[in-house]
Length: 248
Image 1 (spheres, rainbow, N blue to C red):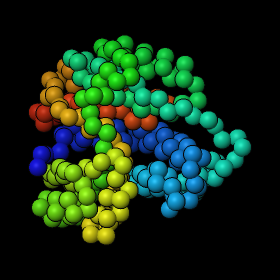
Image 2 (image 1 turned 30 degrees about the horizontal axis):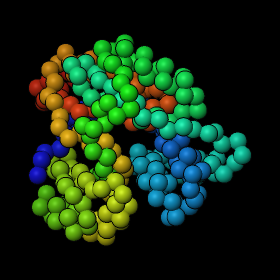
Image 3 (image 1 turned 30 degrees about the vertical axis):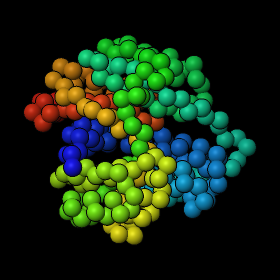
Protein backbone atom coordinates (compact mmCIF):
# COMPACT_ATOMS: atom_id res chain seq x y z
CA UNK A 1 0.00 0.00 0.00
CA UNK A 2 1.61 3.21 -1.14
CA UNK A 3 1.79 6.31 1.02
CA UNK A 4 -0.45 9.15 -0.08
CA UNK A 5 1.17 11.92 -2.09
CA UNK A 6 2.69 14.65 0.06
CA UNK A 7 1.56 17.03 -2.68
CA UNK A 8 -1.99 16.62 -1.42
CA UNK A 9 -0.94 18.05 1.91
CA UNK A 10 0.73 21.03 0.29
CA UNK A 11 -2.25 21.55 -1.95
CA UNK A 12 -4.55 21.86 1.03
CA UNK A 13 -2.57 24.30 3.11
CA UNK A 14 -4.87 26.34 5.32
CA UNK A 15 -3.71 29.70 4.02
CA UNK A 16 -4.38 28.73 0.45
CA UNK A 17 -7.76 27.26 1.29
CA UNK A 18 -8.81 30.42 3.11
CA UNK A 19 -7.69 32.53 0.17
CA UNK A 20 -9.64 30.44 -2.32
CA UNK A 21 -12.70 29.78 -0.16
CA UNK A 22 -15.04 32.18 -1.94
CA UNK A 23 -13.84 31.00 -5.34
CA UNK A 24 -14.27 27.39 -4.21
CA UNK A 25 -17.91 28.09 -3.34
CA UNK A 26 -18.42 29.69 -6.74
CA UNK A 27 -16.88 26.74 -8.59
CA UNK A 28 -18.89 24.19 -6.61
CA UNK A 29 -22.11 26.14 -7.14
CA UNK A 30 -21.42 26.12 -10.88
CA UNK A 31 -20.88 22.35 -10.84
CA UNK A 32 -24.11 21.85 -8.87
CA UNK A 33 -26.09 23.97 -11.33
CA UNK A 34 -24.66 22.18 -14.36
CA UNK A 35 -25.17 18.73 -12.83
CA UNK A 36 -28.77 19.53 -11.94
CA UNK A 37 -29.46 21.00 -15.37
CA UNK A 38 -28.00 17.98 -17.19
CA UNK A 39 -29.91 15.46 -15.07
CA UNK A 40 -32.53 15.34 -12.34
CA UNK A 41 -32.60 18.16 -9.74
CA UNK A 42 -33.01 15.50 -7.05
CA UNK A 43 -29.54 14.39 -5.82
CA UNK A 44 -30.90 10.93 -5.00
CA UNK A 45 -31.73 10.43 -8.68
CA UNK A 46 -28.67 12.17 -10.13
CA UNK A 47 -25.24 10.66 -9.26
CA UNK A 48 -23.26 13.63 -10.56
CA UNK A 49 -25.37 16.08 -8.59
CA UNK A 50 -25.11 13.91 -5.48
CA UNK A 51 -21.31 14.03 -5.71
CA UNK A 52 -21.36 17.79 -6.27
CA UNK A 53 -23.55 18.38 -3.23
CA UNK A 54 -21.32 16.11 -1.15
CA UNK A 55 -18.26 18.10 -2.22
CA UNK A 56 -20.03 21.33 -1.28
CA UNK A 57 -20.98 20.03 2.15
CA UNK A 58 -17.40 18.87 2.71
CA UNK A 59 -16.25 22.50 2.66
CA UNK A 60 -19.23 23.71 4.71
CA UNK A 61 -21.10 25.44 1.90
CA UNK A 62 -24.36 26.76 3.40
CA UNK A 63 -27.45 24.68 2.64
CA UNK A 64 -29.33 27.66 1.18
CA UNK A 65 -26.48 28.28 -1.30
CA UNK A 66 -26.63 24.65 -2.43
CA UNK A 67 -30.41 24.80 -2.83
CA UNK A 68 -30.17 28.08 -4.73
CA UNK A 69 -27.65 26.56 -7.15
CA UNK A 70 -29.99 23.63 -7.82
CA UNK A 71 -32.98 25.93 -8.27
CA UNK A 72 -31.01 28.08 -10.69
CA UNK A 73 -30.61 25.08 -12.99
CA UNK A 74 -34.35 24.89 -13.49
CA UNK A 75 -34.73 28.49 -14.59
CA UNK A 76 -34.76 29.61 -18.18
CA UNK A 77 -31.90 32.02 -17.51
CA UNK A 78 -29.42 29.33 -16.43
CA UNK A 79 -26.11 29.77 -18.22
CA UNK A 80 -24.90 27.25 -20.76
CA UNK A 81 -21.43 26.00 -19.85
CA UNK A 82 -18.98 23.98 -21.91
CA UNK A 83 -16.71 21.52 -20.11
CA UNK A 84 -13.25 21.60 -21.65
CA UNK A 85 -10.04 19.87 -20.58
CA UNK A 86 -6.65 21.43 -21.22
CA UNK A 87 -3.38 19.54 -20.99
CA UNK A 88 0.18 20.72 -20.92
CA UNK A 89 3.58 20.71 -19.28
CA UNK A 90 4.74 22.89 -16.42
CA UNK A 91 8.33 23.71 -15.47
CA UNK A 92 10.74 20.76 -15.86
CA UNK A 93 8.20 18.79 -17.88
CA UNK A 94 5.66 18.21 -15.10
CA UNK A 95 2.37 17.05 -16.65
CA UNK A 96 -0.70 19.14 -15.81
CA UNK A 97 -4.40 18.59 -16.53
CA UNK A 98 -6.79 21.55 -16.21
CA UNK A 99 -10.54 20.97 -16.20
CA UNK A 100 -12.69 23.99 -16.97
CA UNK A 101 -16.34 24.94 -17.14
CA UNK A 102 -16.92 28.05 -19.23
CA UNK A 103 -19.50 30.17 -21.01
CA UNK A 104 -16.77 31.69 -23.21
CA UNK A 105 -14.37 29.16 -24.71
CA UNK A 106 -12.14 31.76 -26.37
CA UNK A 107 -11.62 33.62 -23.09
CA UNK A 108 -10.80 30.47 -21.16
CA UNK A 109 -8.42 29.08 -23.77
CA UNK A 110 -6.58 32.41 -23.93
CA UNK A 111 -6.29 32.67 -20.15
CA UNK A 112 -5.09 29.10 -19.63
CA UNK A 113 -2.50 29.45 -22.38
CA UNK A 114 -1.23 32.70 -20.88
CA UNK A 115 -0.75 31.11 -17.44
CA UNK A 116 1.31 28.26 -18.88
CA UNK A 117 3.44 30.69 -20.88
CA UNK A 118 3.96 33.14 -18.01
CA UNK A 119 5.13 30.49 -15.54
CA UNK A 120 7.47 28.45 -17.71
CA UNK A 121 5.07 25.85 -19.09
CA UNK A 122 3.69 24.82 -22.46
CA UNK A 123 0.05 24.15 -23.27
CA UNK A 124 -0.36 21.01 -25.36
CA UNK A 125 -3.19 19.33 -27.23
CA UNK A 126 -5.91 17.14 -25.73
CA UNK A 127 -4.37 13.77 -24.94
CA UNK A 128 -0.81 15.07 -24.76
CA UNK A 129 -0.45 14.25 -21.03
CA UNK A 130 -3.65 12.49 -19.94
CA UNK A 131 -2.16 9.12 -20.93
CA UNK A 132 0.08 9.51 -17.86
CA UNK A 133 -2.97 9.61 -15.57
CA UNK A 134 -5.83 7.24 -14.76
CA UNK A 135 -9.40 8.54 -14.54
CA UNK A 136 -10.68 7.04 -11.30
CA UNK A 137 -13.06 7.58 -8.42
CA UNK A 138 -11.49 8.84 -5.19
CA UNK A 139 -13.18 8.46 -1.80
CA UNK A 140 -11.59 10.16 1.21
CA UNK A 141 -11.85 9.28 4.89
CA UNK A 142 -10.28 10.78 8.00
CA UNK A 143 -7.92 8.64 10.13
CA UNK A 144 -10.75 8.00 12.60
CA UNK A 145 -12.45 5.74 10.03
CA UNK A 146 -10.06 2.96 11.11
CA UNK A 147 -6.53 1.68 10.73
CA UNK A 148 -5.04 1.02 7.31
CA UNK A 149 -5.85 -2.71 7.32
CA UNK A 150 -9.47 -2.16 8.37
CA UNK A 151 -10.03 0.44 5.67
CA UNK A 152 -8.26 -1.68 3.07
CA UNK A 153 -10.48 -4.69 3.77
CA UNK A 154 -13.64 -2.59 3.71
CA UNK A 155 -12.58 -0.94 0.46
CA UNK A 156 -11.80 -4.20 -1.31
CA UNK A 157 -15.10 -5.73 -0.20
CA UNK A 158 -16.89 -2.64 -1.51
CA UNK A 159 -15.31 -3.10 -4.93
CA UNK A 160 -12.44 -0.60 -4.73
CA UNK A 161 -9.13 -1.19 -6.51
CA UNK A 162 -6.59 0.45 -4.20
CA UNK A 163 -6.14 2.36 -0.94
CA UNK A 164 -3.47 4.86 0.10
CA UNK A 165 -3.25 5.63 3.82
CA UNK A 166 -1.05 7.85 5.97
CA UNK A 167 -1.35 9.85 9.18
CA UNK A 168 -3.69 12.32 7.46
CA UNK A 169 -6.30 9.81 6.35
CA UNK A 170 -7.31 7.28 3.73
CA UNK A 171 -7.76 7.66 -0.03
CA UNK A 172 -9.74 4.89 -1.67
CA UNK A 173 -9.64 4.44 -5.44
CA UNK A 174 -12.07 2.65 -7.74
CA UNK A 175 -13.13 2.57 -11.39
CA UNK A 176 -14.68 5.86 -12.46
CA UNK A 177 -17.90 4.09 -13.41
CA UNK A 178 -18.16 2.48 -9.95
CA UNK A 179 -17.74 5.57 -7.78
CA UNK A 180 -21.32 5.84 -6.54
CA UNK A 181 -21.67 2.11 -5.95
CA UNK A 182 -18.39 1.83 -4.02
CA UNK A 183 -19.05 5.02 -2.06
CA UNK A 184 -22.47 3.82 -0.94
CA UNK A 185 -21.10 0.40 0.04
CA UNK A 186 -18.35 2.00 2.11
CA UNK A 187 -20.79 4.27 3.93
CA UNK A 188 -22.54 1.20 5.34
CA UNK A 189 -19.25 0.04 6.91
CA UNK A 190 -17.14 3.12 7.57
CA UNK A 191 -19.78 5.83 7.72
CA UNK A 192 -20.07 8.86 5.47
CA UNK A 193 -16.88 9.80 3.65
CA UNK A 194 -15.36 13.26 3.64
CA UNK A 195 -15.39 13.41 -0.12
CA UNK A 196 -16.16 11.30 -3.18
CA UNK A 197 -15.20 12.54 -6.62
CA UNK A 198 -13.70 11.69 -9.99
CA UNK A 199 -10.01 12.54 -10.29
CA UNK A 200 -7.05 12.21 -12.60
CA UNK A 201 -4.62 10.03 -10.67
CA UNK A 202 -0.97 10.21 -11.81
CA UNK A 203 0.49 6.83 -12.74
CA UNK A 204 3.88 8.07 -11.52
CA UNK A 205 5.00 11.16 -9.63
CA UNK A 206 8.22 13.14 -9.87
CA UNK A 207 9.92 14.71 -6.84
CA UNK A 208 10.75 18.36 -7.49
CA UNK A 209 13.35 20.73 -6.07
CA UNK A 210 12.59 24.09 -4.47
CA UNK A 211 13.00 26.14 -7.66
CA UNK A 212 10.68 23.89 -9.66
CA UNK A 213 8.16 23.64 -6.81
CA UNK A 214 8.03 27.44 -6.51
CA UNK A 215 7.36 27.86 -10.23
CA UNK A 216 4.76 25.09 -10.25
CA UNK A 217 2.90 26.55 -7.30
CA UNK A 218 2.73 29.93 -9.03
CA UNK A 219 1.32 28.30 -12.16
CA UNK A 220 -1.19 26.20 -10.25
CA UNK A 221 -2.26 29.15 -8.10
CA UNK A 222 -2.86 31.26 -11.21
CA UNK A 223 -4.92 28.50 -12.80
CA UNK A 224 -6.99 27.84 -9.67
CA UNK A 225 -7.74 31.52 -9.21
CA UNK A 226 -9.37 31.65 -12.65
CA UNK A 227 -13.15 31.50 -12.33
CA UNK A 228 -13.44 29.15 -15.32
CA UNK A 229 -11.06 26.53 -13.90
CA UNK A 230 -12.65 23.74 -11.86
CA UNK A 231 -9.69 21.46 -11.08
CA UNK A 232 -5.93 21.31 -11.63
CA UNK A 233 -3.99 18.06 -11.38
CA UNK A 234 -0.24 17.48 -11.79
CA UNK A 235 2.10 14.49 -11.50
CA UNK A 236 4.64 15.75 -8.97
CA UNK A 237 5.48 15.40 -5.30
CA UNK A 238 7.05 17.99 -3.05
CA UNK A 239 9.47 16.31 -0.60
CA UNK A 240 9.02 17.32 3.04
CA UNK A 241 12.29 19.25 3.24
CA UNK A 242 11.36 21.24 0.14
CA UNK A 243 7.83 21.81 1.42
CA UNK A 244 9.23 23.27 4.65
CA UNK A 245 11.22 25.83 2.67
CA UNK A 246 8.30 26.51 0.34
CA UNK A 247 5.99 27.35 3.23
CA UNK A 248 8.60 29.38 5.11
